[in-house]
Length: 342
Ligand code: NAP
Ligand code: F7E
Image 1 (cartoon, rainbow, N blue to C red):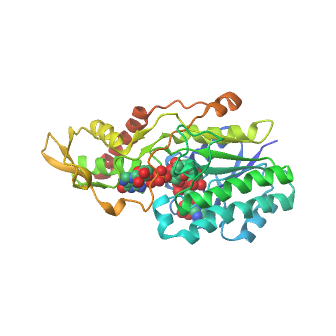
Image 2: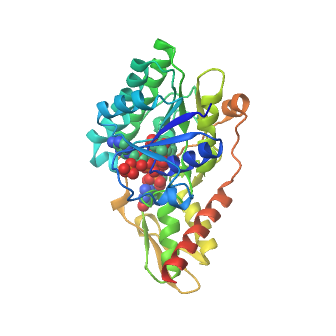
Image 3: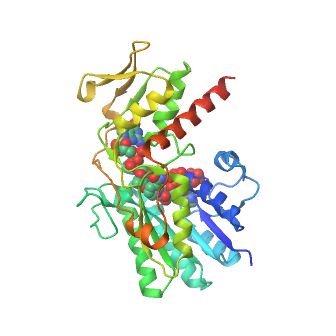
């Protein structure tokens, strides 16, 4: 029988890739959408699946919408990818971040428990929960130390998922996802901000790329591979929690350097601290600078994950390395700008 999957956060990066993967596997995919209409379906459109996903109204802040959709759809699998996912914004919007990222998870779990259709549940947890990291690399046993309203709320989402599994025997899994990127990443996140802005500079639509902390290090993987791990977790014999990562960390500075190279710049750094400048030796122009406006009240200096458990139990490993990821993203943004200017 055709399996039904409900994906919250369908308009986001992961929602789009997961929908594509599940459609390819023969699932009927229902996309939980808080806005309605067909505005902003650009990611589904880019993947050529905008007419294959059935949209249903769900706002994670509206528990009745969740109860209603679980009751009417009776999904085999529920993937909770919806979140206020931008860490920087969570300092300005702490309450809404907590409501969506923490209470939203509980509403979903409670709706599944109440209806007892046996839906399997995936929660998109975050490496940001490790925050002020207690060890490098981080694995499933590493102590959490969240450092933003975003990650504190995600920690609730993680533990309530574990709690519903242990207390009620639900098939509920939490994926502790390290940063994963792609050409479908939102432009507010640093990787896509870098590639989209450098592409615009390359074709004369913009002068500068202004960033915050260049020294922060992240374990950046390729998003289509991460949604495969989500699916694998729900196909396992028993529910569990898994770190999904590449095992490599690189700095924001390294990302800028590699992306500049792919975009055809010859970047050299001049100065230090907030006065640092990235200069293109070919044109002599400053193309990168730093502004404290993008510094965070509390920063995560390094995240690097140990995905051994996912490898051993799910057979999952990352395939796309850092350099390749930057190339994929940079080339996609160069292509987009070329198409835009004709
Ligand atoms: P994303 O592109 O920001 O997508 C998040 C989606 O959540 C958006 O489509 C948004 O809908 C939806 N949403 C926000 N508030 C909602 C609400 N109240 N009700 C219903 N939907 C709501 O995020 P992503 O990168 O795909 O990430 C997917 C999930 O993985 C998120 O939970 C994120 O926190 C988590 N995660 C991501 C990463 C990563 O590196 N990408 C790492 C760790 C964990 P609108 O389109 O309507 O705004
Ligand atoms: O920042 C630094 C910034 O916003 C990465 C989300 O998917 O991954 C993501 O959260 C780093 C930080 O991602 C700029 O200070 C420098 O150290 O791309 P980001 P994030 O905060 O790591 C986790 C795992 C999630 O769960 C989240 O949902 O880059 N940085 N300059 C900058 N960051 C941004 N956004 N913009 C800058 O100009």
